Image (cartoon, rainbow, N blue to C red):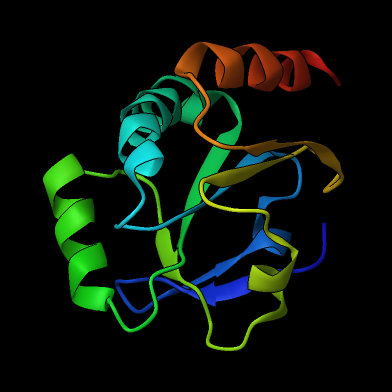
Length: 135
């Protein structure tokens, strides 16, 4: 996975390099995306349940110029993990087939799996737990 460094909604910076040794779910989503609304509660539960066991989740909002809508979404869902805004003209948006898209990264920073479309918490959990069990 290439180095990602993105500005968080709260003003801090989220960097992939700071999560080496952790399993990371990078979830690309948008406030206007219905399947993203369906998927978010499962990501929230997974973050809470496995966050202390080596899982990091980050949400990358693909909304263009919609930071206020993103803030509302995060507040409404009580999203506990960092949410960052997609940088304008970023190369990341060109490789996406659609939203939601989630990239699962192993402890060594290698892409283990990509998901396109809404994924259930159970499916994410199976894959994440398998990577967490690896040493």
